[in-house]
Amino acid sequence: MCGIIGYSGHRPAVPVIMEGLRRLEYRGYDSSGVCFVRNRELQVIRAEGKLNNLEDKLADMDISLATAGLGHTRWATHGAPTENNAHPHVSFTRNLAIVHNGIIENYREWKDFLLDKGYLFFSETDTEVLANLIADEQAGGLSLLRAFAAALEKASGTYAVALLSTEEPDTIYAARHSAPLLIGAGAGEHFAASDIPAFLPYTRDVVFLEDGEIARITPLRAEVFSMADLKPVPKTLTRIEWDLQAAQKGGYKHFMLKEIFEQPRVVADCIAGRADTKRNAVRMPELEGFPVPSRLRIAACGTSWHAGLWAQSLMEGWSGIPTTVETASEFRYRNALPVPGECLLVISQSGETADTLAALRLVKEQGIATLGICNVIGSSIAREADAVVLTQAGPEISVASTKAMTAQMTVLMLTALYWGRKRGSLDREITARALAELSDIPARLTGLLPTLESEAAGLAARFAACKSMFFLGRGQSFPLALEGALKVKELSYIHAEGYASGEMKHGPIALIDPCFPSFFLMPYDAHFAKTMSNLEEVAARKGPVVALTNPPKDGMELRVGESWLLPEAWGPLCAFFMLPALQLFSYKAAAFLGKDVDQPRNLAKSVTVE
Ligand code: M6R
Image 1 (cartoon, rainbow, N blue to C red):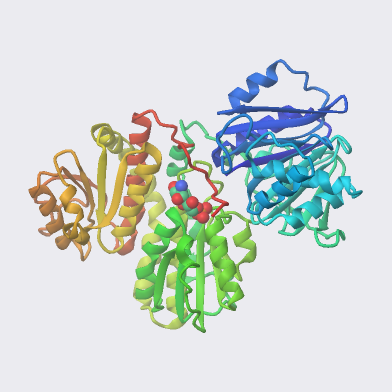
Image 2: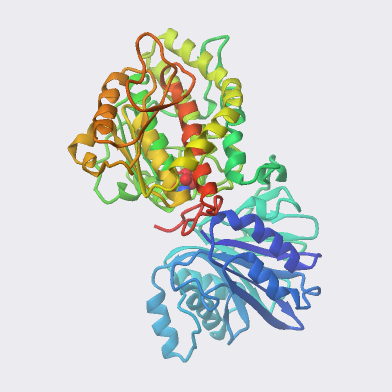
């Protein structure tokens, strides 16, 4: 989704803003722009496409004197991704400019109101309506702060918005409602941004804005007010411990590849302090005091939903808790009946996904306990859930989620063990085996990844020309099949479908022909023999088949087709090898086809609209 950065300080603002926008590129965008005040005049420069186009436009301008300004990368919602619709948007009646992430749902109503009053519009955006609404409040005699608050009170929908005006050229105003925005507090400079990497070279001290708050930043101060009555709100600084290195490519060609290779470290970080193999115990301080649910509902989107599906059988089998898993985008449309003692578990890398957040809020209103599994400290879900377990994956920059899912699976597995032990439904032997095997994963995966990478490259080169492919699995391999297909779709734009292997003969098998390959995920588990039959059914219809499976043993081996051999792992842990293999296959296919791996077309990293 759109990226915002606002700066007020002692440095030339535009280079700082452009650098910040580069670090927000991962969010996905199709146009960009900056604004600043020069010689008391508002300068707004915008460009279609990538940031290089904006840089070209700025190259001939004198930007050195501006020490405050705004920058924006736009992911189009209202209106095509043209220069005209790019942000910042200006109200010329008061010389103010705003940048915005989100959707003002009632903008048509306010646009008609403003048109009747003679305001002019030059774009198709909801954002320009908000800019003029602020100007209109000012025209009614309000100060900039009050006008900003009054206009936002009239806007419904989601927003993170930042404002600059020639009337207060060193001041940035910023506010949020269900979209991320935070303040960076440096020495003699302050920032407002959608995400921490935007200002991390300058400060690690962050103030998290809440919905209904307005921030006013100048070089020397960051103040926060309640939008309702404009009374000051005391805030605390949070120190960010991870450094810029974690948000850079570190020698890898793409963030995605780097993040795939970080997975051994991610598993190690997620289990550190939680998996106590010596005492055969799982420590989850975040869950102490949180009631063990009698029923669990999991809601999430995309890859996080797949992690939830993967964990369902662990929650039921190990914890003994009846569990359902659904996409958060559908959750609230089916009038789910709350049940006393149940818990909604929301899973989200970003902690800002609008649908997931909406599910959380709906259930909270019903008085149901909520638990978040989330990667971003200070995100909306991390703050609003009754309890949160943070996944220590570090910043995930590539739009395609990889290490976040591995972190989610690790934490979900630990949670299932923790609840299973608390409820007395889990054998000590299973806990001991699970913790021991999980502790070995980082070292085993480190050794495996280079091999997987070269094998994935060979397979991807052979199959990248296909128009369609299936990913098929049973049991816990089914969610991984969904994930494998999602990765191929979003990165290489090849049509791919994830299916439960047993569903093939109920329709999809009609698609099989010699140009339609099927990837069967079939480790040596209880489902191997049945999935083998499904594979044979496809092979019999001349569909190319590749089985992601384990080396032959005890009479278990592939009878037909080609195999991609992965080391055997205990129980659910085979997912920790299967998932990186699928990620690397999709990565290599996209790279082979010359696609924009880290920023696939039409996608945004954090989906803050519904
Ligand atoms: O930040 P979240 O985990 O809530 O994001 C959910 C999905 O938007 C996300 O997983 C998406 O599907 C990714 N593009 C998958 O790679």
